[in-house]
Image (cartoon, rainbow, N blue to C red; front, side):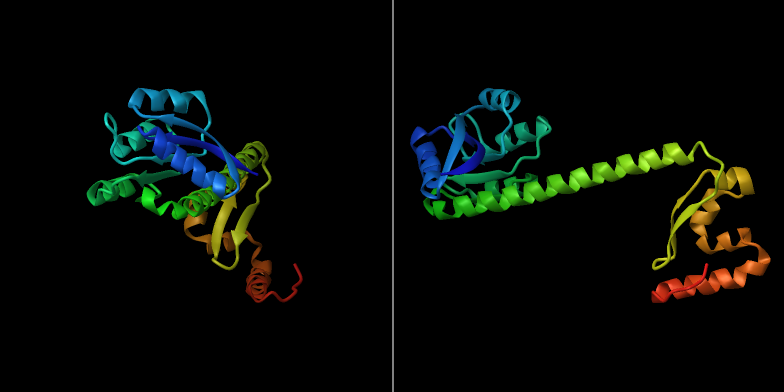
Length: 217
């Protein structure tokens, strides 16, 4: 059997819950699942355990899919939320999709269940990877600011292709007396800091950089 993520099922029917779990098992999965059928039970379940996906009925006796999605968001969670309903209320389904549900289909169409879950989990994994990469980038940039903020050496990072300054060290203002903001706005103004006898060669080298050809510094 394949390992399967933790599945929270929002449904007031034990029989329908068995149908959902049975469909997962038929596709080679052995899911851990829990069923909730009211706001309090769902809130407790979200706080007690880490879940990977939520499968929700649209209309329950004392609850609803839109309320379940709202509780999910109130807990600060961005889990895949899939509506699997006995009766599809198109208006409610559209409202849920606008609110952030990933997909919806009738319980009579359970063949869509596993592909929908796998798709959303792949998307969630990709999103987590991007968030992790962005967090690492932010930390790296913060370390760079801490290091360069305490030294007087002047340097900058310039993207030749888009002709844009990506970073200018604080020493630029202390040593040369120019505003870094002015250099961000007009990147080519850095040439004023180059010795007049070297300016033509510097501009020529920048042009060569765009072509990828070797050049002498």
